[in-house]
Amino acid sequence: MIEVKDTSAADADINAESNKILNQEEIDSLLGYSSEDEGYHGLKTGVQAILNSSMVSYERLPMLEIVFDRLVRMMATSLRNFTQDNVEVSLDSIESMRFGEYIDSLTLPTLLSVFKAEEWDNYALMSLDSSLVYSTVDVLLGGRRGTAAMRLEGRPYTTIELNIVKDMIQLILSDLSTAFDPITSVNFVYDRLETNPRFAAISRLSNAVIVARLRIDMEDRGGKIDLMIPYATLEPVRELLLQMFMGERFGRDAIWENHLMEQLWDTDVEIKAVLKEKMIKLGEIAKWQVGSFLDLDMQSNDDISLICGDVPLIKGSMGRKKDRIVIRVKEKAEHNG
Image (cartoon, rainbow, N blue to C red; front, side, top):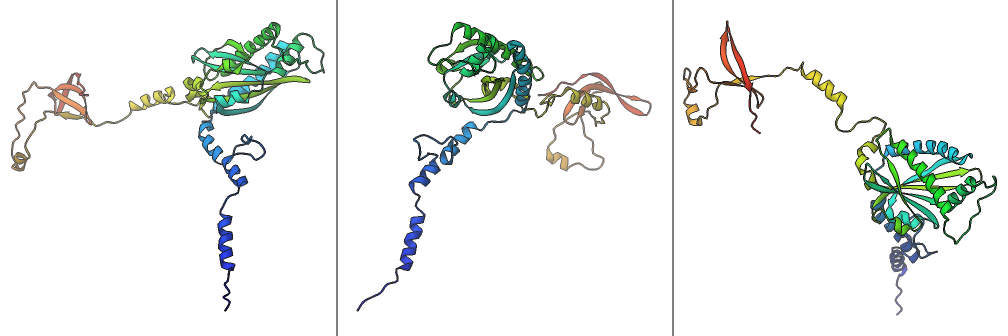
């Protein structure tokens, strides 16, 4: 006798189990790895993006965007006078990242200028790519227009090139100080020039920084400038940079304080005159009847306290003027706590 079994249900269960198993490509995608290379995606996804999201998501500083917009306009004018050429400056992006991530993203060779915010007692970084350095030198030393700047790979920058770039950096720092003037007064001072990113470490690798990427075009030549400012450097003026519009106030507001003081003079308050305070047992109070007398043990010259709520204000002596009870002010009352 041959027994025939229905295997369709079992096959369906096996297929359902296999559909729940991720293949290697799906696992790599989930973890943020690419099958084409050993590293990460340019745009990280999956678990890797979740792990990094808390590290690179920092608060937005609206006033800082206005500062960089002012800087772009002033730099365009300053660099035109500096190079005697047609210079266009544009703001590509403003990004938040970690300091180590920014250093790793730099394309060598590059010049790194460390500068200090004197009033904030902290440092920031400016990086200039090699194409901008050679373009600036070429323009200032009489290079022909319409031709790309000559770039010699594998050699260090000369003293003349470094001095020219230093002058341009100081010009940009002056404009940056002026751009901050409507918000706060700060003076940015040139500190040193480095070609190795390791020697330009002004912050811990895991610290948060904000990077403004600027592009400078001089006809067919030009390059890029990055302004990297750690959030720790901006901490002294953080409240000012969080403003949504120029002039928004945080905390103390002198206009509101003056208005409040004027209105206080027209405010009605209830004041009580306390003759005497005495501790009495509840049992004695229960024995009181109509016509009972309460002995306060007072003399005619004892002081009376005037209180508002629970706050003692002044002390005085009680008297009588015509048909009214009056109090003559003697001194201010002492506050207990």
